[in-house]
Image (cartoon, rainbow, N blue to C red; front, side, top):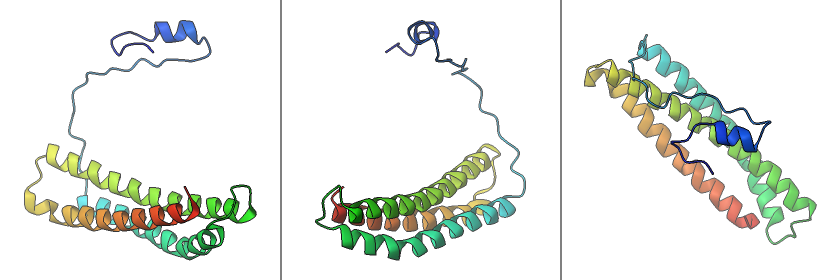
Length: 150
């Protein structure tokens, strides 16, 4: 594997079908225009709520499939069905994680723009609530995966 200091030439020589993009690793961080923070927070909050609702809807089916697959062989239809249901559940959980990442981006932009702390209270509250909800979801998902034998 090439060292980080090497350019993409060595990789391109060994793997001619691979295109190595030129990436400027050192760049100046600039503050992005913050825009209307409350509107952005509302949009991210709606995205998180949609992901959470979808997770909740999928949870019952995932639990039932995991219960049916508990102790079954990997080749069984029950195990395969549980894998599909767990993947669906994980997908909804990931969408919530993306919403949290969006909140982190907004927070970083606000800090770079030197937004006063009192202007970030809603943002911090949303981050805390969403992180707690996602941690709970992760626990549920891990328990179901363990029941299936993953």
